[in-house]
Image (tube, rainbow, N blue to C red):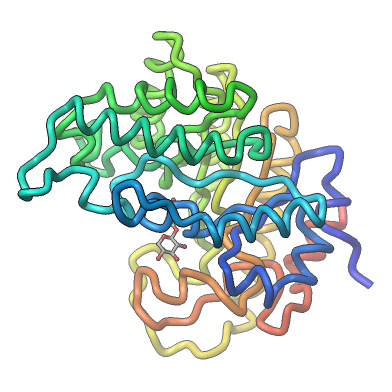
Length: 328
Ligand code: XIL
């Protein structure tokens, strides 16, 4: 019998999984046994919680909280302010023209306050602002409607509002390619500027959408060192280890080869060795799914291509990678 993953990590950090309204049921047994934290993969994003102005749809996220609370799982909240999966009405007047600064701040405040207050005291960490750093060389912030209308301020305003709504929750800035040296410095610059201004920010979320070839352990270590030098918590928020290298567009693989699985196992082993070293600053590690049965990577970046990024296989059995995580 495999031991419980989260129990094995009880002196290190909570082990989380992203769930959706299907996997909450189909992966229930694995969730109960191996994970002590859950995150909504989509159900708590603005477009699902407030598809139309003033119409909040909490049924699916309430169902996740009910599961979490019945089974003693912690909940990570994802996400409040993002350029994706946010309905257009936020940024538009009824006649289709762009909203004023005042109106957009008011809408942001209503959204964050309504959502965060509803789950006050029940979310240990919130991804308040997601992915605002640019991936382009020489460009600091990503172009978005938030940035267009509010300027850089939108970031600190979001944190202030969230903090008011739930003063006990840890508030995170969350991003991907977080271990890339160039992007790392931009994320560092942003988070440092927020801290220096006294903005209530408590952590950096490293999405950790990694693969079997990259990033290197040295780059991940450098990112952990750099972000934690700001005195903030770090959480891996969306860990998966794709079997395809960044940029690989192959679609012919119907099963992962032994060679790929061995490489993946080696990666999982070295990742978790590193994470255990940093247990003082790492306060959570969440996988962006549960087992290889379902992963968003089977549609992204190549539509319809299967991927096998987790430590449980398509039959929900532990892979060799799993055994690497628990045997230390
Ligand atoms: C992804 C979900 O997994 C998909 O189901 C959805 O279609 C798109 O969003 N960064 C994030 C997550 O912060 O919210 C994204 O989740 C993956 C990348």
